[in-house]
Image 1 (spheres, rainbow, N blue to C red):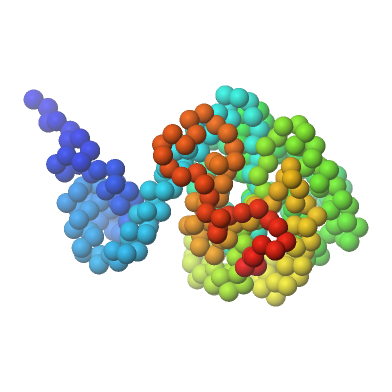
Image 2 (image 1 turned 90 degrees about the vertical axis):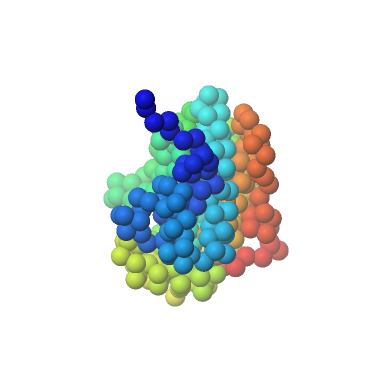
Length: 309
């Protein structure tokens, strides 16, 4: 007679909540191979919580984050399904200063999406051939096809802030871009492409802390670049170009959405909530999770709105 497999929450089996605790531990506590194995049982999970002297308050915060994240990711899967079935085209732009958390947020967005109809675009510096092309050409080639969601980890807005600050474009090229980008995005709007433009906003002190963390973490050192080294030095110049970009490219048909990103976890959750609240899809909100973003974290740009950068 075969042994019956216990159901979730029965005997030694983990409940969904306990599985999330285990997932949180795996992400945030350094475990040996043996310790990792016992997290898959209830007794092992309880023993590990005790042996590792886990900070309960912090564990609960992380647990709540993981629970919220999972629920929002389920909604994103439903959104993707609607986009696929209806042949819609969705582009989500992630802009912001270096170390603002753009890449980490994108990873959480796409974690459970079907890679056949969701992709990330993070273009390298242009080739000599691309430098001679219309500036928008290489970005147009990356726009979503019908039924697809594309996440831009930086976008054509490189020319609005990074390039002029770092001297990667001429004054004429910058001026032409600023004239053309509202027209370019209006064409996308008229062609029924759904565009979301995020700016992840962080303070100068937080950026400095994250740079320091990257320098000392062997898994993050690849993120350090010459551009990063000048980010703090050119902070005020970045601010000047950023403000000019907002004032000239924030349109009713393609508004800038500011995300307060000093707290990475809140930035990830609330940017997801914004996308889900803005775009329509089948079964929206049926699971009971709030899709209304926190206005203290996410909101449209306007001149008097406070930002930390």
